[in-house]
Amino acid sequence: MAARSPSRRKPVPLQPALDEHLKAAALDVADDGIVISDASDPGAPIVYVSPSFERLVGYPAAEILGTNCRMVQGPGTDHETVRRIAIALQAGKVFQGEILNYRKDGTPFWNFLRIAPIRDASGKVTHHVGTQTDVTELHLAREREKDLESTLAHASRVRTVAALGASIAHEVNQPLAAIVSNAEAALRFLDAGETGEVREALQAIAGDGRRAGEIVLRAHRLVRKQPAQAEQVDPAQVAAEVLAFTRTRLRHAGVKTVLEADETAPKVVGDAIQLYQALLNLVVNAIEAMESQPQDLERVLRVTVARAGKDAVLQVADTGPGADDELIARMFQTFHTTKARGTGLGLLVTRSLVEAHDGSLEVARNEGRGLTFTIHLPGGLPK
Ligand SMILES: Cc1cc2nc3c(=O)[nH]c(=O)nc-3n(C[C@H](O)[C@H](O)[C@H](O)COP(=O)(O)O)c2cc1C
Ligand SMILES: Nc1ncnc2c1ncn2[C@@H]1O[C@H](COP(=O)(O)OP(=O)(O)OP(=O)(O)O)[C@@H](O)[C@H]1O
Ligand SMILES: [Mg+2]
Image 1 (spheres, rainbow, N blue to C red):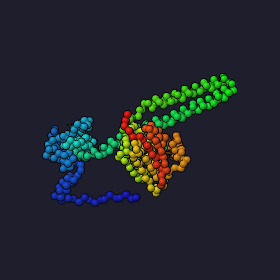
Image 2: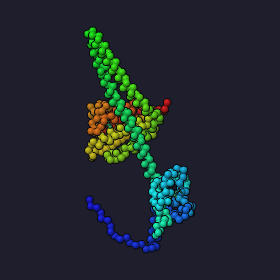
Image 3: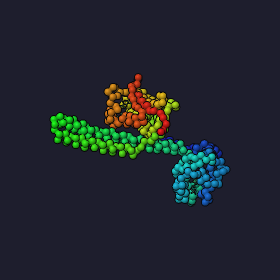
Image 4: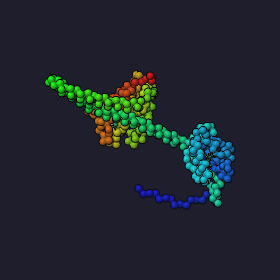
């Protein structure tokens, strides 16, 4: 692609009257506030405010002119930021940063503030010009992102514990297998009247039993450190959060997302983070399943939250390749994966988290393409 060559046309000089008119009009429609203060006066009084600044802070010009801009600061304003402004102004430098300010009616807003000195011919600072932009929306969006990040950090901790559970099961399996084979040997020795051998086999059994017990105890201690919360959780909110968190990924994968939440679906008692993780695994699987298919096949993710008697029912349906009977039988097994980078733990974790909430997880093939995973959770109040 050829780069566009910059326009080299000279600016057309404006007639003085039009110039004034345009400048005033521009200041009037601009969204950013503009304030000029007198630097020669120690009180730094405001000598000019743009109409947009009046709109931003809700004070009419008459109330602001002659005062100092710190009038828009309030109880939540960060002292450190104010100090940085004072230092920058004193040093004749530019200040730029976000500060919490308040409108006349008391509503707070995040102000992206830039203050620059204006100098006369001798280099002396005569005025300061400040520009203000309301960045509240941006600020809140960033806060929400941070919240989600910490939610994810927590969720992945839950997942680590679950992975640990799987490896512990594996560890316990070894001494258990040894116990079984030693017991079988002991029976044979008993039949043959070889009591010395029986004693040895029994000693080995006791040793392996203790080893298995220690592993289980260690697992128990680990899990006890992270008690699950028992609170009222709204499944519809969990679903909305999972979709919010995967929004970018869904968009990149070209997935059309449908969330159908029945407002009368009962709340469930449990740990919101764990339920979030349980559903997240299913949604990630659905995305990965659909991504594995050709682009021209429509990709639809349908998440439904509904009521079934006293239960809450969450469903995740995709239009992926689905699964044959063999895969359906194996997909819940530890470490069973068909993905190059899969760990084969997602469904296992989901099932164990759902069962920890006295719920169940099932899978079924769709009439068209894909699979539907269904979580049943009993509704209720915390004990
Ligand atoms: C031109 C100009 C515009 C300013 N605009 C704002 C503003 O919109 N919001 C704000 O909190 N402070 C603003 N300030 C900063 C305060 O007026 C003041 O300089 C700051 O609180 C530090 O001084 P202080 O420690 O004496 O309060 C502005 C300052 C100048 C010079
Ligand atoms: N929605 C789905 N459509 C088709 N196959 C699926 C779907 N969900 C899971 N599977 C199959 O089940 C297997 C196991 O899924 P599971 O989530 O347990 O592990 P994984 O996704 O392979 O790895 P990870 O540990 O990263 O989640 C997958 O590898 C895939 O073959
Ligand atoms: Mg998975």
